[in-house]
Length: 229
Ligand code: DC
Image: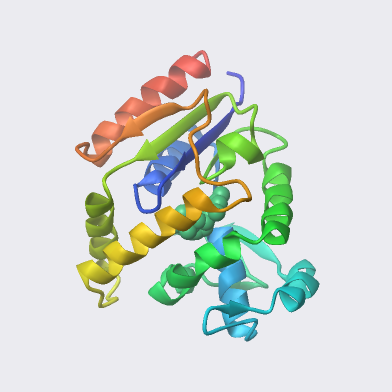
């Protein structure tokens, strides 16, 4: 069976990561959450006081970026990769609202994008990879054999995020999360560097009314077609 590159892009909290992770596990591919990389740089910026009151010291971030080491290491129990920032597991910390509220600002910076896109391309050199994000099918892997663009209404996405955060014990309100989803949509679609958009050859999936097993099945059928198996 030939190994391919699978690019899954779409709006925030639309279940991209869930479907990408499930697929990678089933087909034995590497899974990379590119959003986690932008989140890790954001966490680094918060901890190093590079970002304060939504103001970024861009010169300092650019200078320090080469020393920001991001790795994905498999959790032995779940079999899923977790994000490490300079050797420390930050998987939980990068998902907090504090990071979510600032990540779009960091991910709009061209020098951050260039550095992370380069890293992402290296990770996909040997194919056999599922990567999710915003610009995977357009910028990171424009030649990916399979591209999916996922969307769902802002309200559905906000509710999914609230459920996820509450299940982790993070107290959040629906309105706060909806506001964050909408503002991230706006910034992601309107930034000058690699804005979020569907690649012309990507398949569109609106999963507002789909269950996770339904979307997993849809994706598996398409994968089988593309990988000729
Ligand atoms: O998928 P996520 O919500 O964890 O992504 C976090 C942020 O990172 C999101 O607001 C947009 C940005 N991002 C990006 O600009 N490009 C990517 N390839 C992935 C994420």
